[in-house]
Amino acid sequence: MTHVVTESCIRCLYTDCVDVCPVDCFRVGPNMLVIDPDECIDCAVCIPECPVEAIYAEEDVPAGQEQFTALNADLTKIWPSITRSKEALPDADKWAEVKDKLEYLER
Image 1 (cartoon, helix red, strand yellow):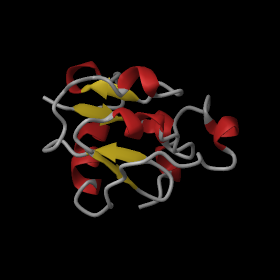
Image 2 (image 1 turned 120 degrees about the vertical axis):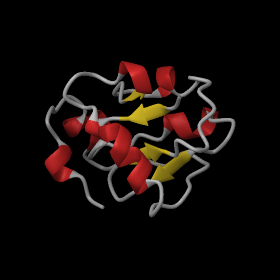
Image 3 (image 1 turned 135 degrees about the horizontal axis):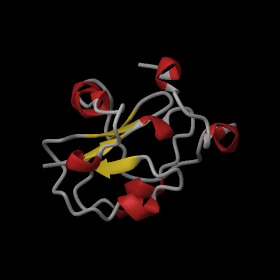
């Protein structure tokens, strides 16, 4: 089992979760984070750190966002590791409450 970053992260890219991860399982793209399912140890320390509630245990991914499990696994293969937090995107607060953001994902 693993944890999954869902669409709430898109266009926000808050990285508070990265600093608490004991195994460095996060990968960073242009406007979203993903979790490497092969690295994640299911510790769940990242969940409460996410200000937009984008991280879920695999079995708790909200209905309609199940595709993010495969998306995390796929993007983890091409995006680099991130081990320290960085500034969120400049307009992250504007996008924090927006729903249905998959079309804005930059690969």
